[in-house]
Length: 144
Image (cartoon, rainbow, N blue to C red; front, top):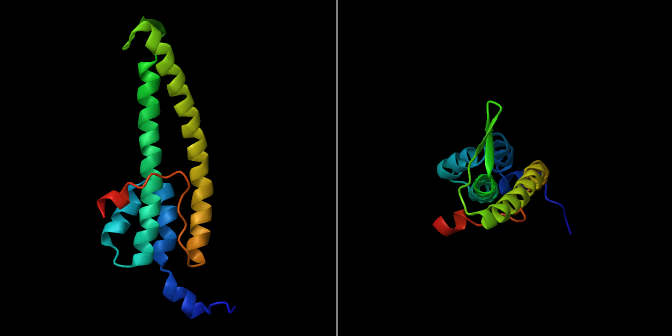
């Protein structure tokens, strides 16, 4: 089996396909969406699609965690004064709070994984292959 030469490898990959992962780390899903929209290169678009899927998944997880955590709150402290605020009935606020806490923990783990996944995806893109982020929901595939 022969290894591809530098020119063959550069034909398979593009700079946009490599940088889209780092751009996603800095801008969330906004940067990869712009690169996906303006690029004609399939390698760049495929890498951007995977980065968008991961960052949108992370964003949805963040929204769900905040909503569940807030729904589970039974009091809010404002300027040192505790104010009772229960948006759901008493037995459910504990469940919402626990689910919200678990989602916040999952969000912290997913945020850490974003750094790890970005490094892996960038290295894979440099080598000319496309890497799918594990756990990402395929949002972009639905709108292709």
